[in-house]
Image 1 (cartoon, helix red, strand yellow):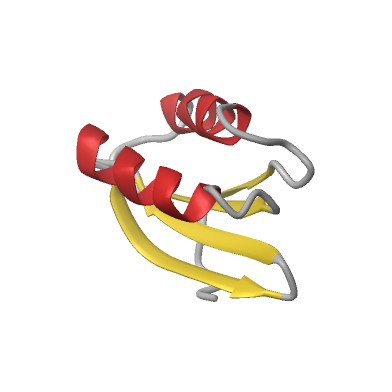
Image 2: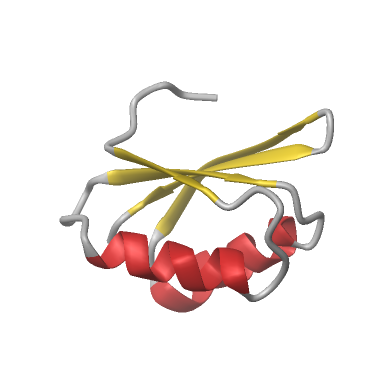
Length: 77
């Protein structure tokens, strides 16, 4: 996972829709082009973040999984 991000959001242990709701709130505090790294454990978050990026215009730069922990890197539009 790319180490260049402006803010990190830990939503491990939370299930849908909380990771997306917390991500929306965190992105609201970032400027255009800034990156948010999200750590999650909900397996459904993979498709949730892909859909979120498509619907909002934010860019999903990276996504990955390691031992049941999912990491996403979103760039604010």
